[in-house]
Length: 135
Image 1 (tube, rainbow, N blue to C red):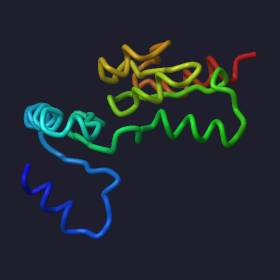
Image 2 (cartoon, one colour):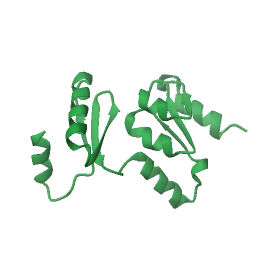
Image 3 (tube, one colour):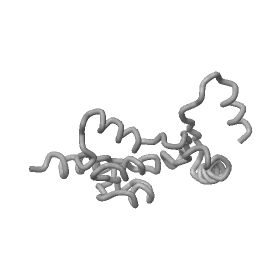
């Protein structure tokens, strides 16, 4: 963990995000250690079985989706978000209709209003056809 602090302090800019790639067992341990040590200053989430990422508090896909919808004048109730991992949870929760993939993480599925078929069965396309293109 000291290497992360050293790397961040060697640059003249504040990093917006970091991603650590590790095997799944190591990623579980890394995620837990990062949350315990830095959780009051950053959000630590899994974005894939092999990826642990960290970002500043309040910086997430849900906040970005909210900002985009406001900019475009689209009401929250008319926004659908589709995701499959822990980093998608804020977006799934914010959207008027939150969709998680059946092949996604337990966290993403728990946040969803509807579970789409897995990625291998074109789950995102199924959700778009069902909710956006249906008459």
